[in-house]
Image: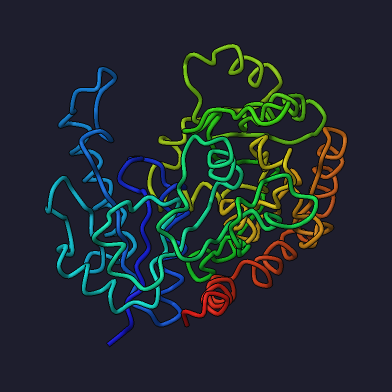
Length: 384
């Protein structure tokens, strides 16, 4: 019988966002590949499915549950998942089964402290906080706004530079283990064909507000995208974004469109795990522009989405967040800091796309293979 390894993450709360689901499936399916019995834990409260006035929305709740069931069916997790509902009710494994599995597991991976269930957390000998948005939880704690770290025994971050010299994210007295985002290579084979289309998927703002820290405002992807709005005018290629942007940001929508960006609703073109994978694999390359907070703090963050592009044999033109010192950035993965560097990098990729495509897969295999990344993580945690 396989050893269980629970991963607590938020999938049900974002119906129709295939990339968001994949960010967490990489861990669950990656642990399965290592020989564990992964258990996906999610939770859904009335507050998470309320309408704008704060009243419970049965339709939103039904959509969230249906989305969770769709994702676990796609991933083959029907018998190893649990969606915690209000009270003691669950979809999938019961609370009692979940408690037994957690007790038998070497650790629980708790993404951004999402689990928040004292009974379940107490069942584990090692609760691991996984920070996938470096800068936000650390600054919230430093500013006294929120403490997501308490109740966790170990702390892991996708900000590879957190806790190191040159990174402006406070360590908050926590010993941070840096890691790269894993990608399950078998799920992301090299895609055939090529095109001159640079694509990406993301949110204009996302769920968090900018943070005032010291004398600076540490912002979101919107603040960086504005600086690179003119990129399509500099390069003979298609630039396309599946961008979650609110109607209130109409002026920014016009800015991007006027500069030649093709904009799509991510729920329309990448609204399931399978369609997200198709969107990535049918691209020519990725144009990856990060959140301002990742860049300004020199966090070393690298996107799980970019790892998927690389695995698919799609070159990545990626804004440097401080990762360029630890990853190869000449072929397959090309880093930039300025608009001029981005345009030059795009031309280099287009000038020898086959070479960069081969190199992209090589980078994925060497640095992002889930078997290596997750195996090393468990070793560092002492939880093999």
